[in-house]
Image (spheres, rainbow, N blue to C red):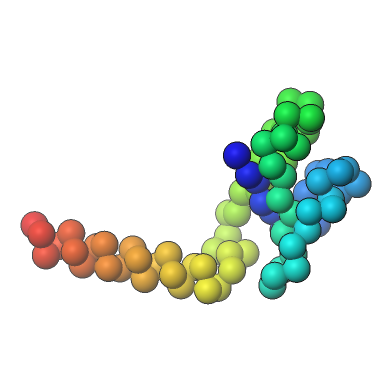
Length: 82
C-alpha cells in the first residue's frame, strides 16, 4: 500500500515520511506500507484522509485527461456492444 498526497495536506509533515517528497508538478509525499506500520492508528487514518481528493481541480490535468479519455472509450465500447 502506498498513500500519496499533496504537500501541505499531510498530517505528518515533520515525520520520517516528509523526506519522500517527489518534485514532479505539485509535490506529493508518498507513505509506504512500512511507514504506515510505524504509525499509530490515528496517524494512519489521518494520512489516508489527507490523500483523498474531493475536487477534480486538485487532480493533475494530464492524469485527469487520461482517465476521462479512457472512460469515454469504455463508454463507447459498451454502447456498441449492447
